[in-house]
Image 1 (spheres, rainbow, N blue to C red):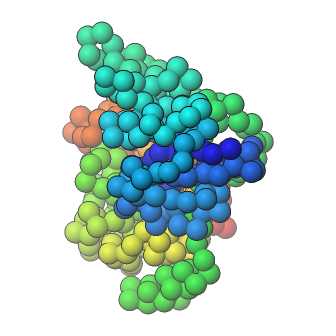
Image 2 (cartoon, rainbow, N blue to C red):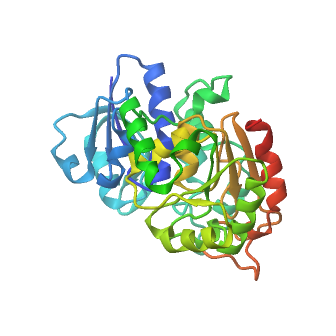
Length: 341
């Protein structure tokens, strides 16, 4: 059985979709799975044992094979057109037909998306369905595909294949932060969420208060993030003495290697959440405007949702004090404590 999976963005979504590939491979062990993704996401799929090959989007038009099952997970015309052209059997997800459409089989997920607009152009029905949903991302797609739901939540965690050499290299690189000797005891704190979603990140002031609360647990706190957070993280470290700014210039695999050494991770809904859960690190997820139900820590940690957040899938918070900033730092530390002692 030949399977094509098209998922290109965002990086965190690519990584959490590896669960779907793993369950497909378990259900169809003789299958050959090809994944088409954005070039920036290729490092996240490197070495994945469930995939026969991984292609960047620009190479996809040269696919010489047609597929028995195409799983099309991008709301993008080029990807949707590729899905339809490459399919010789069943297509599940988004396809192109005078615009973007989704298959009835995938309505459980895409009925909650921007593709399900009401006649007046609004997303009232989609938002209502999303607010009512109680299934995780993995559970949604396993249900759509008719795949078994394993009893152990850890079996639904994302897949990220890091070598021992990559982990050692990440530890050596951490010497530059002064944290190498402390890495295995450190709590990684990722308070940012990239430039696209300001409402998903802690303010520098709230992040500094949280860093202090985590430090009170008796563990070093390592401040991590992506390139967009460099200036923010410097400010946070200045406001939270003793917090180690680990820098933000790492590649994806070096970033994952760094987190693999930490005893636990506290993070917003961002790539760091999916990396941490893939690496089986105890994780406390701080959730603001996105669906708490869809996110998972797979039996290792806790999810803390901002109380009364009404900024559902808005890029910017509508409150004077952001929803995430209303989370009590001591409550976050208390949620983490059982996982590090």
